[in-house]
Length: 481
Image 1 (cartoon, helix red, strand yellow):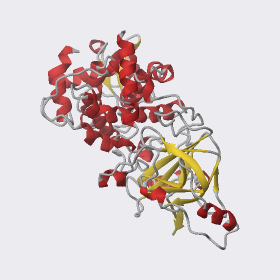
Image 2: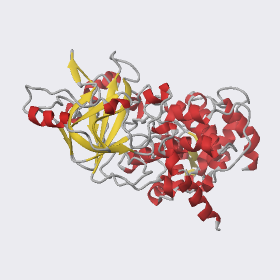
Image 3: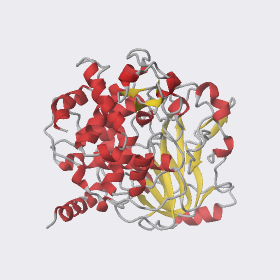
Image 4: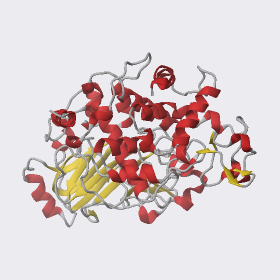
């Protein structure tokens, strides 16, 4: 039997197990240690039949729905990450492989909890449908994005305002509803605590499907655990201090709300779901990717692979629909590897093409370059003080792709070189090498610059590597790649 066929058989063998893995369990069930059976309603779902509202014009319908038994696979409400959506009638619904909900539409929502409110000029707990990452305005919380809050908040984008039985929210198929839970105090970074995604589809997705991206209008089910090609996962001996896969899943399984770039986007990164700063995102992604390369039982790391792939799908949705992770300090780092891993595992040419053809979409690419002679006797466009002796040098510039005027030849001229960028890239760059993704990354300046960075900086300090685990992996395996 050919190796590729064996890999496909191996992948399909754990499809059913993935459906009840830790990443598919509600947070409250996970904490209690109880796991729902596939297709069985949760505790909240079993208690979800609403009381009759006699003064509603829909009271007759509500009464009939309340007394009729709900068919298997149908629900009156579903809950995810502290957000509850209530349907106007029993609706066919189920879970993607990562645990997020789908519902067959069109659907009418009569309630979203927590309820969107406006008080003292601040709107909280907003929601958006199919967010457009080409625009930086948002409808989640009017206090988000700091001093630019009011100029960035778009009340028309907020679809959660006033949802009730009398004025339901109508959602057509091919719609992702992204509901948010705000921090109670305005002016916090981040301003959101949690978020959740409900995907409305025209037909139930195939078993084992990943959730489509929450950005954009395309909600086709293109990715499944049955199609995984796991040949990219090596089996290296772990080094000391390797993280537990289950701990990484806990930090990665909740939706990363990441469709607004830069500082404004940091206010929208749910504090209970993801790091708010790109430097810390890159460190986490590096640790997770390196853990996938270790020789540990695959049963222990399959949930980690699933959440990494779902993250890659969502990041693809951001950049495919016009978004970018701009070069600005450490803000734009860490998002390319999950997308590239997903493109490779799923053999998805659209993902691979974005990684190959655009070097301005991700912060780590947009900040790294080779010094070159841009005109006779002029180097790097005359920016940074480079000379002929620097030609071919892999270098870093804070805003290089968009504005190279801030590039500086001196190693310590810009503190972001050492505090917030390459010291968090170590793990993800090494993991990409180990997985054979360097060529598919299609930006060799990044890899050569991190090599240079690790030679210049002294071992053992956080400015060389924020992750001690990644540094130990580098010392052990870099020369083998």
